[in-house]
Image 1: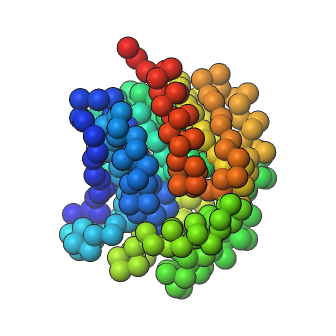
Image 2: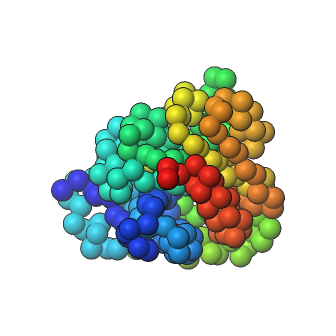
Length: 268
């Protein structure tokens, strides 16, 4: 069996649905408190990316490795999501959610990303991002020593946060140390390097909100601020004193903006 999408659900299934996708190497548990908060008003289904799990049995049951081909991954996520849900994606999960929303819009009622960018690495026409040299150093470390590589990424995520030490320890407490899946980590990095959703970002035909932290060391806020002219259905919110995980650093503000945006743009 292909490595499946692991999900858990919160709230009343009769409420408006949200499908939430976590980021590279980070199990869904890092977003659980955030999902529980949103489940006070919405039905929330929280998903891992393939091969990422804290459940050893879940990994064992996956006899075929995780597939990070973007189209195959999109279909897996669509199959796991409630019908006509709002999608919320964090980091790589946000980039993939943009791809799905643009190409399979009938499956997505609205889109919200957290700390996501149209391109994670520098490429022609997109210079405000991680350099390929820096990315390749990280990828090499992950291949040679997966645990060290993931810890290095956690430190990059925490950089710039109001309390970097506390946030780093908080993120490290969620890491799937006993279930690190090397093929999932490498497959996710390949996708993170290759994925360029600038075109998809610009043609989104549904309400789309993008929440960012102004201290994010991985995402260029300056580049994303210019995206507000790309799509009239788009709104960008920048939270002060937050780094790469605003849903942990300022949960109240994230929830406030998400509820307000969904309320203003949901079908009656």
